[in-house]
View 1 (cartoon, rainbow, N blue to C red):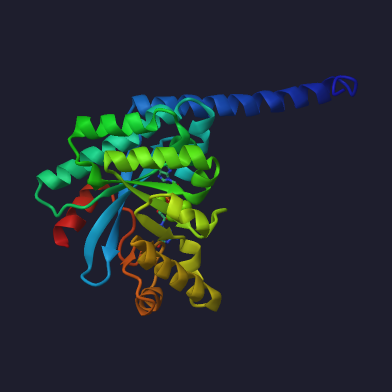
View 2 (view 1 turned 30 degrees about the vertical axis):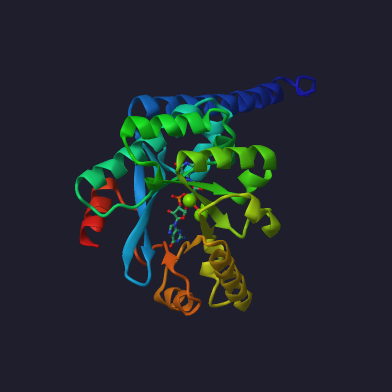
Length: 277
Ligand code: C2E
Ligand code: MG
Ligand code: MG
Ligand code: MG
């Protein structure tokens, strides 16, 4: 059809399509190179217990700096990697690096705590996930209770039976499991007892509008109560201000994570942070 409209139009049309396809191809190549060239890095954000200000965990967050593209957010990078098979080596790299780092901290005599690693829904459904986790633990020598896997409610709800099986196997391995962005996904509370998780991470959207939206107080209290009933850790994410912190303390929230205490830190800075607390 474009052809009928004349040469110029056709040329314009086809070159647009070519450039879009070639851009995706280019990104894929860059991502592939990123693995080979070690362009990835993990930053670590502390999780803090409010009663004693102790670090209860470190969340590993993926960073990719490319000289041409600049910083590429994991929110973009992970879905792109998932469209290709690159998600497999990236998952392995993240898991291995986080476990190695935690082992380094332990060997340095810093107080022991789990390192948290995010898994996308797709990653959680990878058939060899449990095997890969087991291998990385063995290879790095990290005891399983010091690895915490963060998944979303959506990942669990996509395929209940598979999710339940996978969670069972992961718990059998002895690793911890956290429900990330809790409250935003499509989930039913009645399923909670079927999924053996250790931690609920209240999504940052509830915390950030805490002062303006009184309903959020009720939601946060409910999640904290739920955690007490099921004997789960509850972490409030995205705590940025003292005011938010005070409100959370008032709700008997025990653990927080967010810019107020620390931004995600480069490995060296994370080590310093652990040394000071
Ligand atoms: P998430 O797991 O919910 O991580 C929390 C995000 O909020 C991080 O963004 C973190 O830097 C940011 N954050 C922490 N404290 C605050 C705060 O006080 N205020 C605000 N506004 N933001 C805060 P980041 O690092 O850009 O990661 C975004 C998402 O990308 C993560 O959300 C996670 O779902 C995903 N992600 C990150 N690393 C990985 C990874 O290695 N694998 C997978 N599959 N996903 C990852
Ligand atoms: Mg997370
Ligand atoms: Mg989150
Ligand atoms: Mg998130």
